Length: 207
Length: 365
Image 1 (cartoon, chains in turn yellow, red):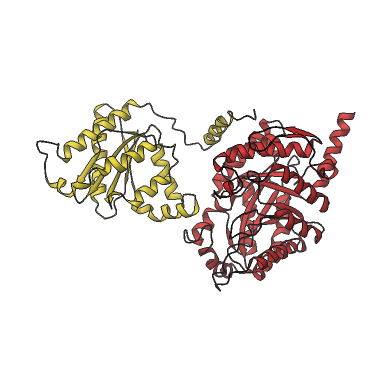
Image 2: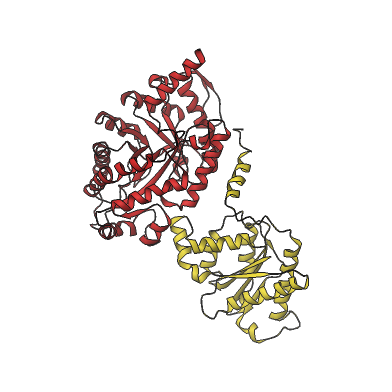
């Protein structure tokens, strides 16, 4: 099965990308213990910044963006990681998800995560990212992972797990949802879209 | 097959001079462009309908009636007539009147319109766009075919014993195209009535156009009007030509870069690769347009957008000379090659009158 991680980090190397990779590893490890093979693809939004802007202007995705959207909507599970900009997800992160059909992520297992310079922004996951994916009717796992700069060099304390423990827990939750969810129709055939349209149309009064 | 032009009727600043034409000048330019279309041998002129600046054509049948009086052969059409916010009774009457004045050289393309506030300005709700298109066209269809109509619906007052006047010329309603870019319901509506389907593909990748037309063709057969290949399909196109393709690119680029619809976005090169826009020599336009047939099958009407984004009238008229003299004659010849016999010709009033007479004869026999 396929897992897609969307990373909205802008620098190279990027701690957002690093967090996305670690979350994907954690989910993959958990799925492996269940005897399931995982193929992981990372979508770096930085490389799609201009196609995203062009889609906003023209209304259709240029080829590299169309491929990324297809990957995200076709995946068995999704990891979405953004840096915190001005108290929320980054504009590029939001713009990318603005371009995805609102029904395309329905029921999809999603793990949300964010990075930032200070742990004071960690609730961005709960007041910005979780409502976004709730609107899209995705199945967002309970543990969302926030990595502040200091988390990369410290452990847990009496009140919470350290970053590695939170990554393991979140990856495990995502893997459990993905394993439990029956594989969707894996058709790559665009003809099927027409068939689907025809099915919707059978509700119309014309017949 | 029919070839023509369609205009949005936008008043746009020419980015190379900074000059914005007054509305009066733009309206007169639209007429000059329509007359030129007939002069260079094109078949169709179609105008948009808008009720907000920077667009001028709010009253299509007024303009088309004027053009009808000054032309002999040109088919006058719309792109599009708003089936959602216009009263279908008024559409029935306006276009039947135009049909008489133009001796049948009239058809129309229905669309929903995509400017949110236009709906409330005309007392409607954009969220009801599809149901409005469905109910209003159902009524329009009857008004042209039944002399006395009793009707009740959701969106307008009921009609009892109503006769739309004048009756359609020769008892045959104007041909209707249903235009939609991405609503399968409209492709289905066109198929249900056995009407034409126009896909304004000019801002969209070919794959999307292929799917929509394919859906329309399949539904056309589903509703029993004939084979998928017998359905009536129209496409848009957008071109800018000079003898030398480098000259075309150099001259058109500032208009592209500042165009209201797609300007300040993708490069001219990306956009020409991803959409039907062709900027180059007449030969390049011919090759590109012929490739549309591979996307949608043999089709009936090809309309080009030629006069937008602030291009001056003089330039547009030069473009129409190139289109009429160098492009369309070759397209007529090439599209005719290998065209299966079952593919219908583009609809004309004369052909529809003859078909109506033939089917009447059949039912009498």
